[in-house]
Amino acid sequence: MGNKEQIVEEEIVLKIYMHCEGCVSKVINCLKGFEGIEEVKTDMKSNRVVVKGQKADPLKVLERIKKKYSTNVELISPKPKIIPNDHKVQERHPNVALLSR
Image (cartoon, rainbow, N blue to C red; front, side, top):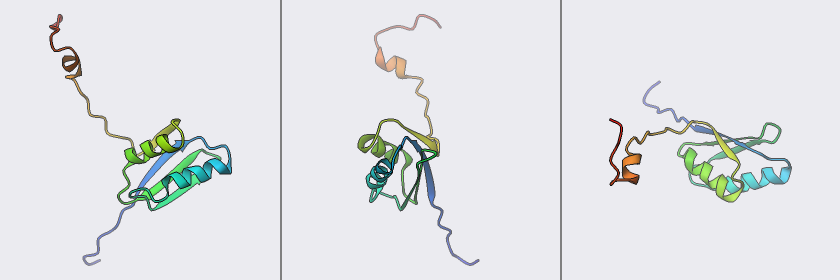
């Protein structure tokens, strides 16, 4: 009680294929010291990596793993927010008139 603020750590879960302890070590070294990451837990059997940190950005963590370790990585949690872009077709072809209205 009182004015204490509760610190909530963001948990990022990734699916990464790791077949040996060398792979696990590469993943940990890739993420160690990266911006916002406080803790990295790996589970080789289930091919899961849990990253904890208050200021860790899931998309930046995902891009870091893809760049440094493997492109075969999937973000399990939290799911990224998808912003629909309905005007993309018009941006690509500004001189083409829409035929069906």
